[in-house]
Structure formats: C-alpha cells, structure tokens
Length: 305
Image 1 (spheres, rainbow, N blue to C red):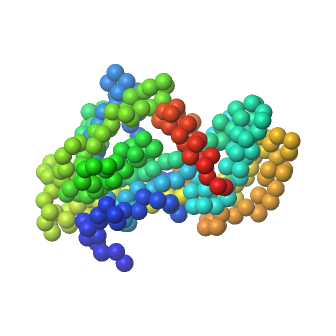
Image 2 (tube, helix red, strand yellow):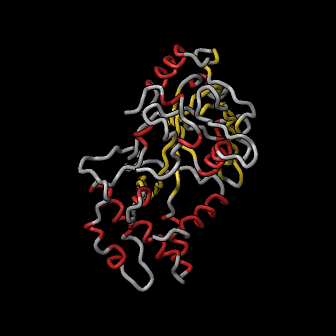
Image 3 (cartoon, rainbow, N blue to C red):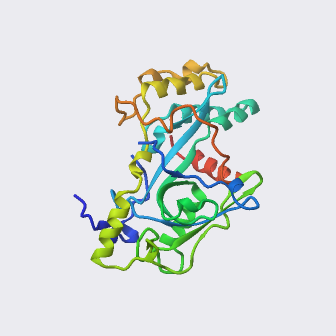
C-alpha cells in the first residue's frame, strides 16, 4: 500500500506516463479561445500530483467521436487504449487503405483522438476569477503533453518534475486559434522552479505543509474517473450501428464486423460504465492543429494492429 507521503518522493524516473488500463466524470477545466480577450485565452495553472497514484500523474487514452445516421453523436473510448482489438480502428484502416478516394474521405470520421487528463490548480484565470485556487481535471492533447515531456526529459538542462508541489513549475496556458483550430504554441512552463501556493502563500517543505497539501488534494476530483471505460452492451450496439453505415471496398459490412457480436474487451465489466464519454453529446472541438492530426495519423498508421 502506498504511503500517504509518496507524492513528495516521486522523481522523474518514477513517473508512469505510458499505457492505461476507465472514463467519464465532470470537474473538467475547459478553457476555450473564444472565451478570452481578443480570441486568446490566458491563464496560469499548476500541474499537481495524483495523490491516489503518485507515480501515474496523468491518464492517457484514445477516444472516438461517432455519429449515427440521424446525426446523433457520442463519445466512445477505444479498446486499443489497453491493447484490445477495436472494430472502429479496423474499419478506419480498411477505408483508409482503400484505392477509392471516397473510402479514404469516409475514414476521416473514424479517426481516434489521443487525450490526456491531469489535475491542475488554477492559479490565475482573468476570464473566470471564481476558479482561482480550485483543482480541476484538465484534458489536453499531444502538444501540451510534449511540453511536459520536454521538462521531464530535457535535452540539455536538468529535468524538472513538474508535478512536484515544491520543485515544480507553473504553466502559462495560452490558447489561440490558428486555421480554425485551437493552438497551444505559446503555452509554456515558467522558467523558474517554485512551490505551489495554498491560501495565498507558497508552501514550505515541512510536515505541517505536507499534511495541508494532502488534505487539499484529497478534496480534488478523482482522476481515475477518466480512465479507459470498456464498452457496455449499449455502447457496443451504438458503435456497430455507426459502422454499419460504411462499406469496405469489395466487401460488405458483415465481413468487416463478423464475429464482433462476440467482441468482449479483456477487462470489460458487466456493470454500466460512466456515461460522460459514451452518451449523446455536443460535437467535440476541432483538433489542436491540422499538423497534429497528420502526426497522429502517421502514428496510428505505424501501429501493427
């Protein structure tokens, strides 16, 4: 069992930033460029340790936004997140690898997104002062994930454990629009390491301060609510209904999805999964940049699935 003070003794090499083995929840921090002055959202946040699992500071998973024939959209976590076979991904590659330009175009609607979820303290937010001092779950993409990795594993400088309450760094979040897409190029970690701030004062590395931080984090949202969520029967049926709209070149949909009636993710529970990622919802924002979509496509194409 992890010691309650483990969050203060996690080095860069201890952090698990790899594969995840569930989803949903609320308490998301959702800044958008349209909410900021002159179309640019600016805030100062602090990435925080995950008190329930100090060596796993963020969640990583692949997610689909799918729409049925009536235009009703819903989120579905991809079983490929945990290495399971994914019928959506199978269909994506069949369409993308087709010689038909129409098929290739249709594959665009089956692209998966790589999402990351971490706890952040909102240090300053001129757009919403009521959020300052609160802990939220922040969902981000590959661009910000790369900025984190550059601090954890810099090419020349000493690494910074950005999730450390005493020796981390604040993050200047700047979200603009470029080509119609959210852009995070101007976002960056501040240059100097600093302790986090509680009740208006920087914390000191004392037992009393540690207890205060633990109490603060124990009242934070549960990050595990955003982990990969295996499909329920309802979700599986909705996904298969979407896939039935597509025809693989020279093959019927039955060939593409044959045996999928027996499809059961290796870790799928019988109980209903949280609904935040799988129920009908508003359409998601566009990808971070067109370039990030291309990079993700290349990444997916390189997988041996």
